[in-house]
Image (cartoon, rainbow, N blue to C red; front, side, top):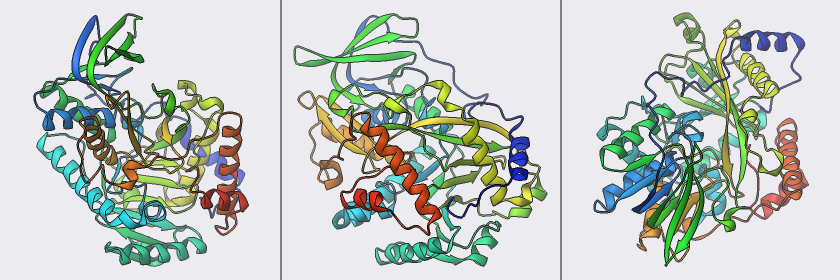
Length: 481
């Protein structure tokens, strides 16, 4: 957060006490209703469409495929368990934006932003309708989102942002510090911007599990514990090679393949430098008592984010816990992904300190869960799409942590491309263009870490961007925190 000063020792001690009993596990996945795992792929099989990855992108692709092409067989291959990675670990903010926020869309695709906003709003409405139609118990709440300013320069930025949104027809409410604190009471808030229509809140893992069930009920075959090792060509058709959790090899011949691997190593060489994996860390408190909840207000249950470069996001759960995440996106050299990286004592301690600074009236509260998860980011922050192998292999990547709803749109884009259909979606410059790649190591790590340092410095310096950030802006590049 930009307005943070050096945290005193007493605050560190309070944060340590709050974290003392936190389980190193994912709150959303720690659920007795979590479905039992499905068996891995065996032998040699065939499917009209093979989807690699059982997160949101893969599950939406499978479900939308059986809806759009009911005569085509669909198989999903998931290395672990469906929804176990980013789709089950995030904050549950389902945003209408397809461009990682209005500002990013305005900077990159100003001429088609009205179309993108319309398609994004329709996509979010369709997602809510699907949740209702398929009976998915993910506690969808149309709360809207509240952006909060913690420093004077952020108040000015919010006012400019509100003007840009209003000029494009968005209905938003610019709030003074007092008005913001009436909605949610924190002494750190100097202003806010409320958008009632652009965001709904969901329980992320339950959304993934609900999509999984809907797929199974409509004939999709799902194999978990099945890691895809390669997509090969065989007489003009892709063959997907796998190995099970027990080391048993198998394969499936497909007419089409949809790659939905998010942050994990892409199966196409051309994509290896297009994204990098970064770790996001999260805390969840014990349920708030009635008195604790009354002390902060939050009767609207909005999803909240501050507008610093290194920002926090937070929301209330079904049982009135506070989920608190973000601030420090961590990249590990060589695009390393490992279970050991999901826990970070220093990052979780920093999050706890900032939480107690934001809500000092909740001193004494305990965190029950702490975890991390890996997301993919690209140099334009929003998803990109394409095909390979003569149009028989499609992909959608690069959601940069804002894919809870956008992955549904991405699934339809992939299906359009795989079936050679010309649609309003495929005509978008956003869909037809691709981001610039990241450089190879060691330049990649040097550039990312310099960018992270520069973003933190800008937050401490009234938002002023140094020459490195200005250069990235000029070339449309970046790294999102």
